Length: 235
Image (cartoon, rainbow, N blue to C red; front, side):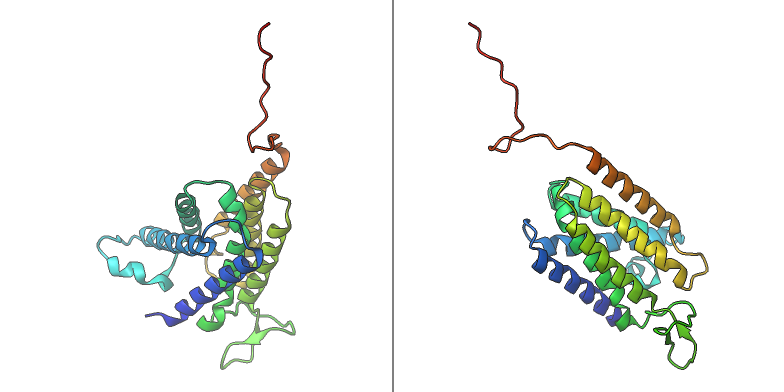
């Protein structure tokens, strides 16, 4: 059992719970919806990572539980969004917009969980707040702390946006991608990280946000239905 990953998951859960307690979104069981969707996304991302590495999940079912071996970020996000849409009975965009800030704060909690995993540090740095790895005198960027703070700021910005359909969703997607893109160069990596997924998330977020701002909501009557032009009765 990987207890450090459980600690990170608990920190992410705490972030979601705190956000929902503060924001109080008008939706049933918001924390359950997000945690369940995140678990589904984690499963999808792990399966995708195994397939991309040439490992058949059907022949090695036990490897699915070895999350530390790798989770594909892009497919995990797609899986989580699909699971959330299904769990909410496709009440879109309302569900996505209401839960977007809490989702970002949950991501911030996951990054902050580096404290339990011992994986907060990244590339070499001479900045005053750099920390050395145990047994070394070389300072390194606390990159996961950067990411956690970035996600908290993104959650605040998404929450403060005007209430327009898909605007909070698009902003959350784009801001999360920006945070990951900015912090990725500070992570030790041989491949540079999944920058393609981050760029796709940024483009999608900007496109959705722009479409939301340009679209005009339909006027509604006091009874909640769009006004319809009624023809006068024939004389």
